[in-house]
Length: 261
Image 1 (cartoon, rainbow, N blue to C red):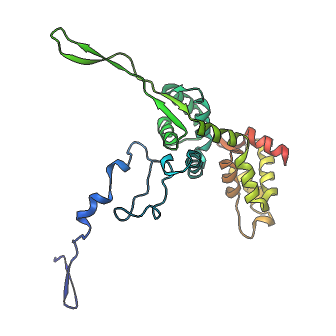
Image 2: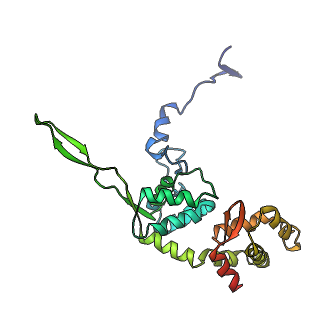
Image 3: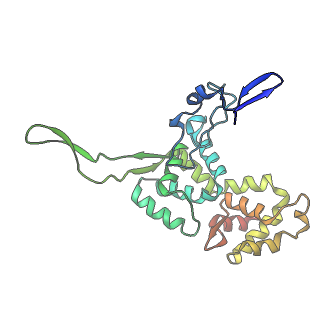
């Protein structure tokens, strides 16, 4: 079967790709990190696209005027991992070996499974400017009896991750409830619903179906239509609720917030 198409006297090759020679210019292998599925950067449609047209990368602090903005963008893009991100920054305030971070993060995510390994989360935080890593020397120069120089491995490498001041600043504002305050200001119409959900989960951890029953039939959420997941997800992003033991549980920040409502 021919791969040619005829249109009123014109003949086209269906397999011809006019951009084939430019393919390498579009795809820079260094822009993609196969070890980090969450590490994705915007790629231009054409080479040398004007800077004002390209959307800023979420995970790279170099693309922001302030690393704090990059970190906030990371949280916004990954609300489910936000509690873990904050815990990592907190545990790295004075520096922490990668082996200890991995163990503690695995425990943190026991009830809130993530496809991302602890070190992948650390690298995302590093890109956002919240962490820095120091890799100790693990080898020293040595020489054989016949004068051949080589590197001798002296110890197993256990990198030290340390929180930056920018990371600690964002950690402090989140622990003090900045996200909750902004949420209530932006979505104040439903303040009574948020309070009801927090009070309900303060009594004991709740399932999604249980929260549905106290939210989905309220006249306040009928127009525009809102469902319980809207409030659950935003409270989770603000660190007032967390998923634990297959139920939604109020956090310490959520308890403090409830006491002021």
